[in-house]
Length: 143
Ligand code: FES
Image 1 (cartoon, rainbow, N blue to C red):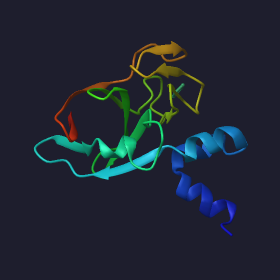
Image 2 (cartoon, rainbow, N blue to C red):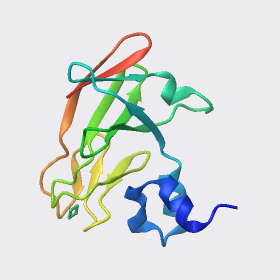
Image 3 (cartoon, helix red, strand yellow):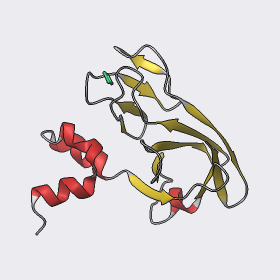
């Protein structure tokens, strides 16, 4: 049996702030994560990451590149339309948590929609976004 500390570690640092709330914890630990390596300032994520092993496509996948200070939340709007959001809160720089339809900051409660727009302060600026395009198999994020 996994102890709580191990579980939280696996669930990811960004979930720690809401660890006391079991329902939210379940939500954030289930966000699918992908590690990738930038080549020519571009990240490549297979479309399979959104559909493998699930009945309905995942709404969001967390993309981590080791040299980047924050992960990127990649939201699937349709099979060919994706949004890539830098997960640094525009209020004071905490890492936001990505949920299926929105992102929430554990520090002071700012919320952003899947397009990165502020829906609740104190943040006033939208999340930084990246240019994205796709081919049949992959999604490309331009850093
Ligand atoms: Fe995100 Fe303050 S740093 S709400």
